[in-house]
Amino acid sequence: MVSVANGGEDSSEQTKSSQTNKESTTATKENAEPKEKTEPNQEDKKKHQLKKTVSQENIKRH
Image (cartoon, rainbow, N blue to C red):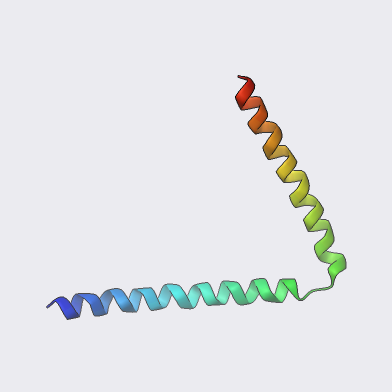
């Protein structure tokens, strides 16, 4: 009985891992694109991080 239950859980875990592998493959393809495309994204990330820190400072002030 117990082995059957574990087998069911294992099969669902395998499905999750295969989905994760697909996502990581897509990310790798995006990274393989020319640097010109990725640089603006890095700038956006920096701006987003700055916004986060500003909002955190505002929370501290209140």
